[in-house]
Amino acid sequence: MKLIDKYILRKFLGSFVFTVLIIVAIILVIDITEKTEKFVKAGVTTQQILGYYVDFIPWIANFITPLTTFIATVFVTAQMAGRTEIIAILSSGVSFRRMLIPYFIGSMIIAAVSFVLTGWVIPNSNKSRLAFEIEYLKSKYYFDQTNIHMQVAPDTYLYMRSYNNQSDVGYNFTLEKVEGTQLLSKLSANRITWDKEKDKWKLTTWKKHEMDGMEELIEEGKEMDTTLAIHPNEFENKYRNYDGMTIDELNDEIRKLTLRGASNVEVYQVEKYTRFTSPFAILILTFMGVIVSARKTRGGAGFQIALGFFLSFLFILFFILSKTVAEAGGLHPMIGVWIPNIVFGGISLLMYKYVPR
Image (cartoon, rainbow, N blue to C red):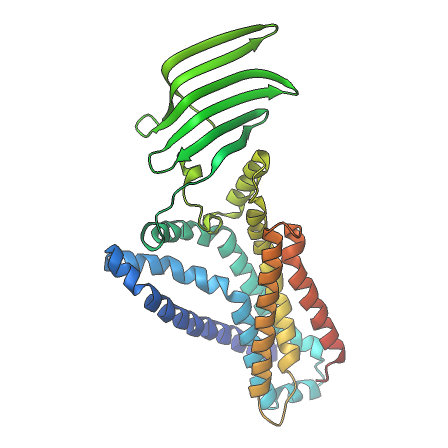
């Protein structure tokens, strides 16, 4: 690596860290200001608040990484252009394409670290952050769905008329095992209740039908403890629970929801694909940032930095819109999260070809 590469890389990574610290500090002040009253009302201790923000800071810092990378790129490049350093580099025989290498090395380092953090490290700290928000910052959650149908295993279907997540009681319960069009067994109960001590369900006024060829065996009773392929936490508040899932856990959740025919599986698929597309967004925005700010202007770097901010926020708005449509089922989740990268990648290539430098 040449001296100029080390110079650009050091400035780029240094500016990135500085930008992250500044923006996170601003977000932190705003967030604390907004939540102070809720903390007081909930009676949260200082230690609990500090623990919450220990989890919150890495999450928000990683969440804004594409934006902060772009801002750092524009700032460093515009500064170098204003000092005629880029003109000197290009005049020495270094091509613009060659000058991009340290930027891409820096952005690939950021992208790789961000991918590991997003995929496996931060989700584990998010579990406690989300639990804190649900416990102290969100309103009490009541599961209000009725006529619950779900597939809990291959050829096994569950039905409940309603479920009370405060007392962990379900009503008018039925569990059927079907092979093709033939009913093999049916277990029904007036009520099912979760027993925390036994870690099992208690069925009240139950009846079981077993089909053995042409014969039907019937059992019934007042109460019975049994294990079912559902757990009370499936009826708890699901507020952003995908933030607390590693990529492996997301894959398991997607498989489970797909098996059950759940209507919100797209939300988890979008989250999964976003974690894979985010590193590419960092590379694309770095490329665009260099092109936008590499030209020296008479008015200084202010216009270039403003243009950089405008393009970065345009990317974010486009990403949010595309993501929302994908989560609603209007687009395939993979296509929805890749569209912003494809569009802005194309814009970057056009700018590289036509924008004078």
